[in-house]
Length: 100
Image (cartoon, rainbow, N blue to C red):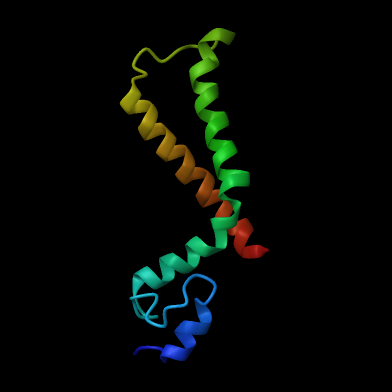
């Protein structure tokens, strides 16, 4: 079941003036993922980015402070850990954003 074009247009009018946007129906998984994304989008530069930067910089600087260093820290591992940290921060942010 598709929503009428008017309902989609008014729901997403801040994003696009095109009445055919978004290209998915209200029952699809993409629609729900996009709705969840909108809850946390405004907090990325204030919460997710600083948390991720702090954790990665801490990982790189930890040997300077006498913390055991992981000898297998490579660029690829650092990139995957960055994605993991950002995902963890986003998952923890989501309930707070929904509550507010």
